Amino acid sequence: MVLSAARQHLLGGIRLGACGQHLLRGSRPGAWGQHLLRGSRPGAWGQHLLRGIGSVYTAAKGFQEIREKLQAFPGGSIDLVKQESGIAVLTVNNPARMNAFSGSMMVELEERVSQLEEWTEGKGLIIQGAAGTFCSGSDLNAVRAISNPQDGMKMCTFMQNALTRLLRLPLLSVALVEGNALGGGAELTTACDFRLMAPGSVIQFVHKHMGLVPGWGGAARLVRIVGGQNALKMLGGALKIDPEMGLQIGLADGVLEGSLAGSGTNALLEAEQWLGCYTAGPAPVIRAIKSVVVSGRELPLEVALRTERDVFGTVWGGPANLQALATKAKHK
Image 1: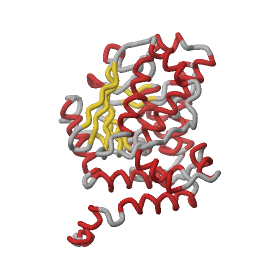
Image 2: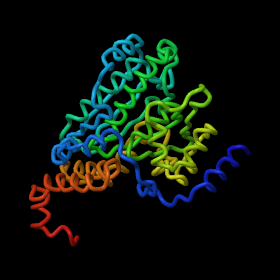
Image 3: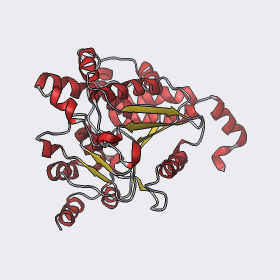
Image 4: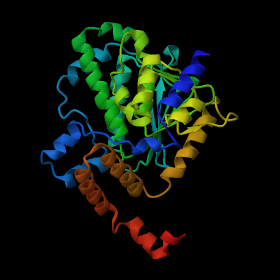
């Protein structure tokens, strides 16, 4: 009854059409955009985009200290498999804790992002949780140990940086949500370009129940995906978003078939097939597509246009372009 009322509030507060409407919403440039406005060469940034270098903080001051503190709380792993298809699979693997992030897993996530930034053959990325559930946020053992404001801010900055770099990778990324994506797990879903939800899955920003707000960039990204009013209702009500509601508000981009969902490998196969619709083609072209979208989403228009021009120059006259011209692929 309560959820039904919340559902009506979500639908009544803001008009959202088909998946992808959130792309129409603008965003103000952050430090990255301001850095460009202060005189960095757009050409250089076009190259950075293609390589996937997208740190939100220009300096890593304090990161080594917080890395060492996080490493003191081991458990679980962040597993990465790069496939010949150009689609990588990153698995949040800590099933004993519902795939909660231990301290060492936070550090591993940043390391995996660094590896993906160097993967020039990549086109796509699927993020999933082990054992049929996505991620339940932070391991409370690690959280309690760094509960002082100074360490909390450093952990927040560290994870914001890692997840921003993840979202800016020149790979089309999708969160494969089975089971629950709670707290930091919900934030992780927003650091992907797309979200696919399995029947029975839930995305829930539970931060209010912990006396917190999202700190890994999840609130800022959520606003850009579902709009400010829906974000306020989701955060203020700690609403459980199921696949149907996810589709209606634009948080989910698709729902897995019931016959395949919940069976691990089959769900991953379906996600690979879904993502493959958008990653088919040469890697340089797919990576360039992601790069111009990132610049258009995050940079002021004038800078985004210059960056788009520079990225365009990397594929114009390239092998894929010349082959398409020779076969008149435009008219197929």
